[in-house]
Length: 251
Length: 273
Image (cartoon, rainbow over all chains, first blue to last red; front, side, top):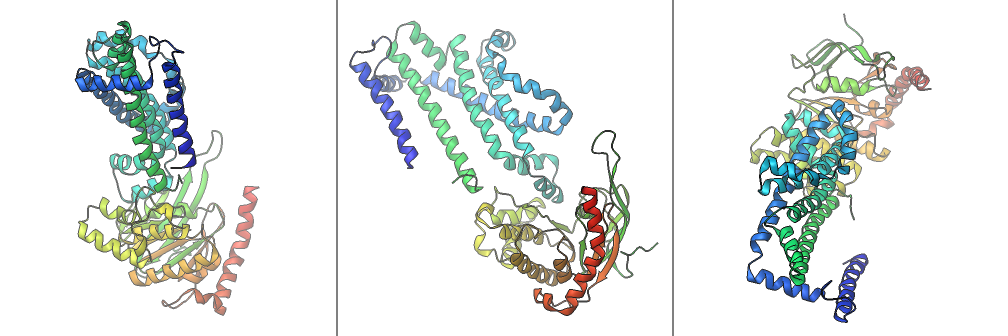
């Protein structure tokens, strides 16, 4: 591991140890926050009992659906918008200000449209992630070398093959920015929606535990979400680094 | 009408009255007359070079011949068929920029065109391995372009064109980004490739010595709009290499090219100012 890596691990472990000490010493009330080891123990019991597994499965599958839809939809929309420069000029300011919209205000509307099901939740996650992917796609397509497209035309490829076999990999380093944001936004969109109005899922389980003063359970679930998001991001980071190294863009 | 570029005999590629006019870059400006009218006959198996001042439409000429863009007026024939804005079979292009795909290994880069053409795997493997060996890249099949020098990446691009067994190879200043020594050696490889494949070659270059050393015939282009103002036949034997630069006739050819081009290059500079 690099020096920076060691410092990073030391920082995280130090913060956890400090929290452990502060809570164990009774400086912070156990009703407010519990020691990290107690969180881990509570999570272990929760998972071992199997009671939480349906909620985990529900949330992770909704996140996965929102993520796949935003990445695929964002790439296709990005391709279409990139192919129509006039449309793009018209849409640019809208894309730039998109994240000023608080999507959650549309949640009641989405329930009216889709009913009380997983669909409004996935829709919120998708709405959150898709535009980050559109912007990253436009950015990446702008940087596809013109000569790569000439090579594709000389190979007499059709537009769909050019998009998938040449443009997609050529733009991949930029697309990764959108993919990483889509993961984060899918998690935020799905879990926050479950918080507001849902009868299942990790977001609901956390808010249920909170309302019932079940502090260990609440922290256990928060820890689980933190660990899963970190794990997904580490995998993505690994793939990205491998790709960048291969292209001589990372050490 | 026979212009200075036409020649009797079996022509491999024929350009007649080829003109390219680009639309105005900005509102209220005049259209840009980039090229022509221009006539050219390329004989089968000929090594032809194009030299001219910068901005004279050399690359436009290559793109029209490759079918990557259509002429505003005039016609292009390759092996008796009209070429108009779509790449014909049997034409390969090597660009000045690094056109290797950084996400593919050297082997996969070279196999790219063959896979797109849907060739069977055994034949792809045979051709790719042969081209890699021919270009001195056999030990780098599994490497990625980022691990190679600029000269080696350009060899990858040449190999990628070579595996398609093109009958006409167009090269757009392929060694422009390389240092002088590497360019001379790449010139030797290009001559070897030309002799071994029997392909017709059109080489665009700004280096007069490169044109004089490699070519059977050199077309000298005027400042924009580019037209041929001279055709210089070198009369070199088919068996030749970079040592020809010490030949007295080499100096004469280069001198003739420069005497033609000096005034045109000044014109090109003038339009820039």
